[in-house]
Image (tube, rainbow, N blue to C red; front, side, top):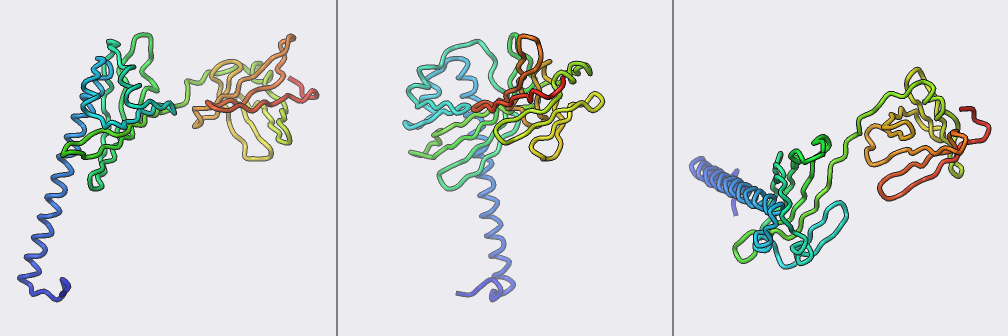
Length: 247
């Protein structure tokens, strides 16, 4: 079989035109699929808040899985939970489709509209979906939803409030030293690089960029800080303040 380099100029031009047409057709089909799936997703996002079980039943496979922040619901259990709640549907902000044969992987980032008694800051959801073409129709087989975390608003503690937290803390063989540097809360853990923690509340600190964790400080009956818990969504490490540390 001859390669492209062995073709005559006329045949090479023809081959290039055929290849270009095939690529153009594939791109056109992918664009149509993306538009189709986005329309389906917009319908499903609205159906969630309208309690429209039929829409979800028609759009999903029998083995559909709904996963939100680690909680898993099979199709039957998910459909039973759908109820009209009166809220506005999510707004699709970005939408990506990657197709492999009869499987399409979809990623879309959604904005949460204003909710009663809720601030819309930090309200963004990332959907990861698996769609499959079955019986000539695209059906949703799995959706995994994660809420994007961002740092909470920081407050400014007084120098006295920071000094109350300052000191040396231990957890097993590890050491954490907190000190005040001007108005900053500077922390060094087991000889590692220094970090600057921010305050969410008087006795609740956080490291910028790690929105899932908090440093929650404890006080004794005398009001002095005795330690803190380094707490995230699934675990907690307790740190005890050394008795020799001065507030």
